[in-house]
Amino acid sequence: MMKIGITCYPTVGGSGVMATELGKMLAEEGHEIHFITSGVPFRLDKIDPKIFYHEVELNHYPVFQYPPYDLALATKMAEVIDQEKLDILHVHYAMPHAVCAILARDIAKHKVGIVTTLHGTDITVLGIDNTFQKMIKHGIEQSDAVTAVSKSLVRQTQEMLHVNKEISVIYNFVNEKEYYPKEGASLKKQYGIASDEKVLIHISNFRKVKRVQDIVRTFQKIGQQMKCKLLLVGDGPEYFSTVQLVRELELENHVLFLGKQNNISDLLSISDLMLLLSEKESFGLVLLEANVCKVPCIATNVGGIPEVIDHGKTGYLVDLGDIEKASRYALDLLTNASKLEQFSENAYMYARQHFASQKIVKQYLNVYDRILTTN
Ligand code: GMT
Image 1 (cartoon, rainbow, N blue to C red):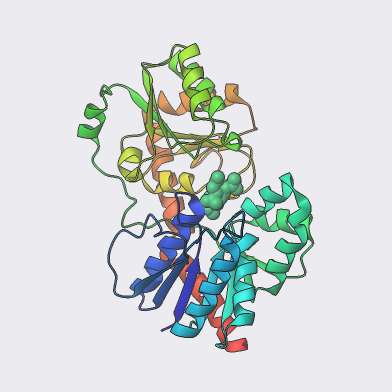
Image 2: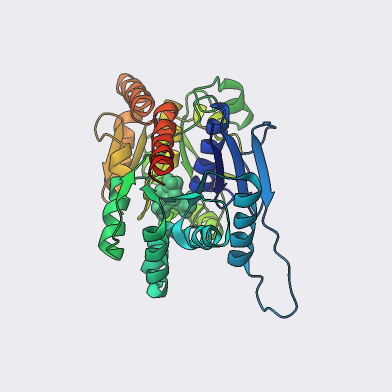
């Protein structure tokens, strides 16, 4: 039995989901889990005697212009390491979490191993502002072990940072107890979707990189050939420009804006096809969520996406911005029932085989074990 601390951003987002699900699964295996975050992770929705939550409090001191989140986090981490005698502190994101963890390790008296998982955002930050380069590099190199969610992200990190550290790939997973194909006829009806209409779905945080406008334009082309609806799930900076585009294209009766939703697997279960046409994606967790609910995906051939989708078998890959091809592939699947069925089955089998939660959790446990035996 290990005592493991986990730090992530607790709000909605693939990395927060992954960190929380990992904590829940480790607790199921008998390990003691201590979340050290600024809010209760949103997927931490059930009581579990093996899971503890330590809140990082942000006080607004009149002397500081900004509340010092990083230092408050490092202090809390050090406190929890000593108090709970943590064996491992697993942080998601090098910036700032790995750096905070390293500072906490220096402050704490109890010996702890630091594991950092990269989710891609560190690299995105560097693309915008490389003043953080040395700090992110330091966070990675001083961690006891570093993992990344795809081979593509490992390559990118090495290209941008030239880190003197081995980074191992541990793919994302989904909790199969929550994500599986469910009966969806009544929900479909509640949304006013006719039984002969096909349903396309896009789920994201509506950031610019998600290219939601490409989703709408692809859908427009599909809608010219067949009866269908598009579910847009999520919220973010591009939400209103997307609403505007939908109005301009006179698609209001065909596009449903659902905002942020918790029970994603229910929505996936009424969907026939997912579209994810991002310009950057280190993994694309929603693709995996779709696949385990038997929903194949059409996605861009960028970042880690080709490691999740087997082109021509579990879904299709298109070049960034190629909405023409995306709509052709979608029509090919949606108008061919046996092919769609075959892709759904393939997607399900592929996801369950390559990204099984048991297998991935074991890989993380091996990383922890290695640190504990060498430390
Ligand atoms: O994509 C986002 O905007 C959110 C971000 C996050 O921090 O959750 O997602 C990143 O991590 C996910 C979990 O590993 C990956 O599935 C996403 O592909 C990755 N996003 C990007 O690389 C843009």
